[in-house]
Length: 533
Image 1 (cartoon, rainbow, N blue to C red):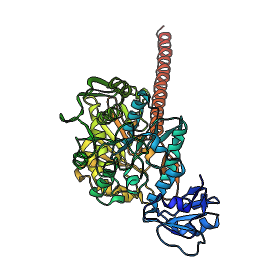
Image 2 (cartoon, helix red, strand yellow):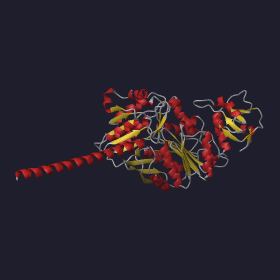
Image 3 (cartoon, rainbow, N blue to C red):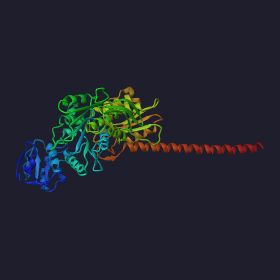
Image 4 (cartoon, rainbow, N blue to C red):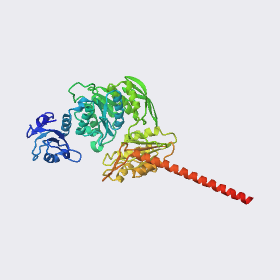
């Protein structure tokens, strides 16, 4: 899409043109390594580098103009100077892609825990409602019938708009999107007209980035305070509508912030919730509860286990109502979702105990996970947890997670998660700071995560439950100088298979010994008879 510097500058607030306003550009780039001739290069300040440092390189590769946050000398091409290049990138990416998000029904989900499962449930509901959804989540994206692995919960603005464009091209009608606090704080989603915004909960996480819980909250709240600000050229089919968990104190704060400006649908177990659950029953095979809404009441039989999934199902049901999906379709769609990778994922190889893999990596997430695991553990069974904490991330949650683990589990294996550039011993030390000395007898430290999983599984007994927490769907483990393939579900399955094989070998060995013993006894008896004769 060709455009002049002057035409593009008009799209941006408080933009100043330095150089020729008539210069034409053909495309957009924010990665100096990928710049093509006649591109408009946007200088964005990242976590590890400043895009302004690569302005000369972009110009040398043929960039026709630059978007910057300050005047640059010596680059020899026109500049569009703006107050915020991140916002400019979002606006320009949408423009070059034909404003695709304006052609979709957009559902955004934010919160600390539950986003991924809620996204899968909403995707199922929108599909059942005939709205042909795409999905952008932590695990993967579903775009135009393809499954695409993602590196970030919310992709960067440039990549995001291209995915929207692919959805529109494939005649998808809606998009379900996990929206991270980083994406909101860094304006990756700036300008997207969300029709439905969902809040799951807020607990401690990402304080290495946000600094305080209050800053973290305000980053999340932007999804809701911005509802209705970004307009479409034509009237939207519905919305905007906010879907809020009122069992969460931060959810109640968001309701107070927006209730006079946008419609709100609340959900929870609170009797005052618009969408609520009661008579909840949990088992390893799933959950059942009564779903009560203004559209009707019905029993829901979820295939997903873990009592925390009740709130995820309620959030999805409320979003379905906001998106004008029929009640019967909502109930049916909830019940059709069989599993979500790495979310209370049961690993079954015919053993007599439960093994669960889950992504829980926050204090609240771990607490809810262990509570849910305890609920499905039969009387007399023990609960074991394998977990660690990520390096280069919020250190304050490590002792909290250590205390939660020993308070809620019978056995605790502390191991590596993704150490990244930190010393694993320092991470474990932080976790141990939360564990009282008198409770250390139930704790074992095994840095090799595969070995920790193997020991937890191999020492489990019938009716026990083994929880492997922290990495969930991830298929890698990051160290300071390398990354290796690592999948908790694969390691758990391998440990179970090895245990089963070992038991089979032992059983066969016992049979052979018994046969040889019988033969020996038989031969001896014959000898004794001969002697007696």
